[in-house]
Length: 143
Image 1: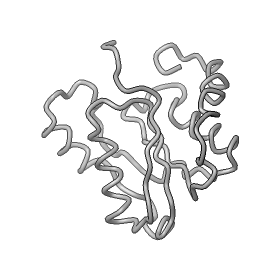
Image 2: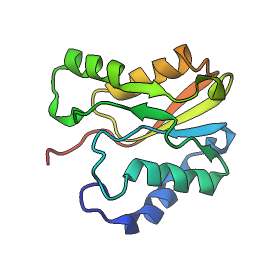
Image 3: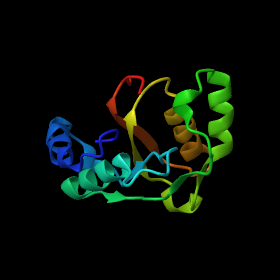
Image 4: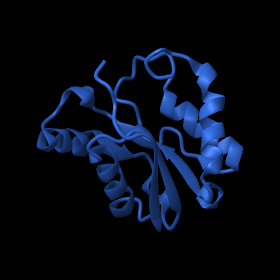
């Protein structure tokens, strides 16, 4: 979906997620924002929207913002990645999620940097009750 621009697999992805119980208990689903803003569509947003619709959970689209210009997949140094992410990620409305249960959705888990920083931001600035994470894959191939 991400690299071939094939939206037709979205329904299959949502069907695969049917085995995961408890998603409907979250207050909000928050997609991790893309670092490559030039794609015709953003797969993580589409997955989050479809999952939310399927489970009856509201999506906070454009709530977690990435103002960074650099794609992270080319940065191997974990310290450099963390510094970039801490500068780039922010919440649009910190009061919106106070006391809420959040499900962060991302397409891949590589080092965990993005998810760790987003989670920290939600706890620190958003005063959320709980954050859980759902990723589609653990690693990525180099493309």
